[in-house]
Length: 588
Image 1 (cartoon, rainbow, N blue to C red):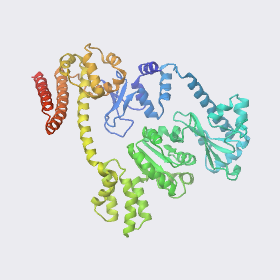
Image 2: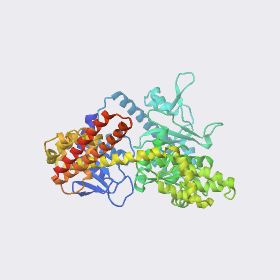
Image 3: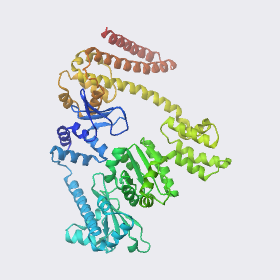
Image 4: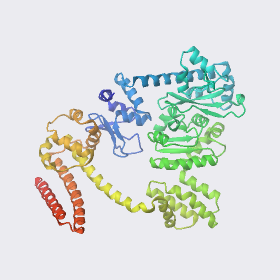
């Protein structure tokens, strides 16, 4: 499989694949365009054909052609690989053939079930009651086709007879995908979904992995649940499912936003009203996996939950997950109906207006608190701050956090400093000092990484400079993947075209090589002197960092009155000073 992955990448034109989503322009060695993963006006997104990699120097997104397709389409590795393999004419062979065969069978039977349910709805006599119900909900034929809606017969064995007796599938397979349940006596199975409007649950590639069934009012029985979902299976994982994502992903990618609603009917009605970037969470609990899927295509989430306490609680729970992923969050306030479905059906224009007039989630939380409690009473102010401050503490951006703290302070009539003090208490506690220390260390590390990558890019472009620079790094350790790559480049004394060099670079270091190479976006090849200066800057930074560590060790040795250790460290510092002087002398 690893060999096939490399073969697919080798046979795939990354510029052509990326170019289907991004308008690219050839500039020097690279192709440049506006990043598809974040909003920007000045292009910082690069694709390099020789390296087979893309990199955005604005938001940091980067990787190979497989990762690009995964991110831009919101699909998994296997599906991205299969799509590229088909285009490249590579037949995938898996070592886990048995597992793959079973998965294929599972997907096959789910697709067949979806077609059967769809036929019953659109053409079967028994589907008349479901067709009438959908007509009353303004769901037309086009929407039925778009979302592949279906109907399950009220009988206990309609699907069983079709898939087992007519099509020859095994009971165990149908049970594994959650289409049937086993009878209590253990002999035989019966249809899990009966007398319901069927919503196929599709993955990002459009494959049916599960179902939601809504009981029809005309067929409802006492104590029967209104909605029934497929159980967790090898195909279907509720925490990763977003209803309508397959239909909405193109619009989400284009508009860089997603409207998140609760139920399937909310999603379909919103789609019908022209808000085609809508998906349903299928409940009220948004998960990290769902946020991750959405974050691949959008940078804004518009939350539209039911106008009740449960809906408000769901919105609040979603804040932290979205903030951690860097997404901005707005709330579509439900006015003129109990849910998005009702509003969008009655007045599509009104629904579109509500979406466009959505408010920032922190404004929503703040307004909700002020409606509940009296700001003119001390107890009311206390309750307002207790409800709002924890949400302000979740804001990742410090400036945005302070803006909202200021707004809260103005509303309750106190100084901003007081609100910020409460926010900081929630955020940091006693860990602030250690965080500052970590940030300082990170800054030092980042500077060394930046200098290392600059040198890598220049050594790839001017390989003949290796002869001069290599001796300087004897006895010097450069940390991280960058250090390993620099060592590899300095040992490689044979000049070769970049596309050939890439093939020789160890697989685990190619991404670092590609990003470093693309960062050197000048059309001109760097001169020998330029490469030497880059090497000197990196070496001096490494030496300074090492000297700083040794000085701390020397202070400890002095405090411990360890003269032998002190002399040893002094000798090391002396050697480092000599090395630094010698390196500077190389440049004349």
